[in-house]
Image (cartoon, rainbow, N blue to C red; front, side):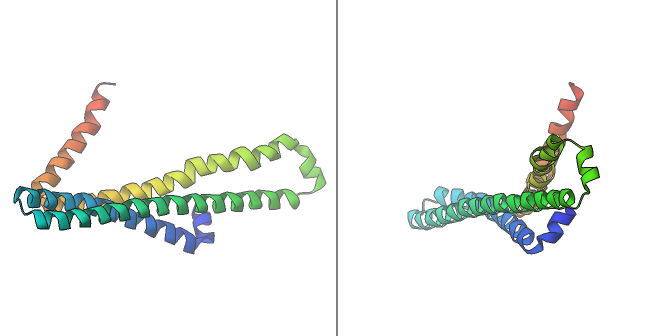
Length: 170
């Protein structure tokens, strides 16, 4: 994975930035809903309409950036797959006839088809999921700290309880 990221530094960086910005806007949109509730309770219709339009724009931006990030992630996965297949083909092409004939043709085809898909499924996709999950977690913690420290503490305690209880009832 490091080798792939190293070969495509700029594209990988753009994808990571898109994922992080999409996560930030998504959390920000949810965070802004808390102030919208306060405006609705104050019965100030003019401010509620302005805030509603602003929230709609923020949610549209969040959805658009998420779509853009996922599209770019698919593009980058294709680049990675092409790079992996090219590497396999290069290794096969420099192989001597004697070494090439030791293996069956189906094994080489398996390398090109199955192994590249397994690498994508087990390395590339989880990497982007980890980046997305980590950035969502960081921004959610920041948003909870801005709302109230007790909400953050309750969230951590709930997460710990929810991770421990299923292990008790295996």
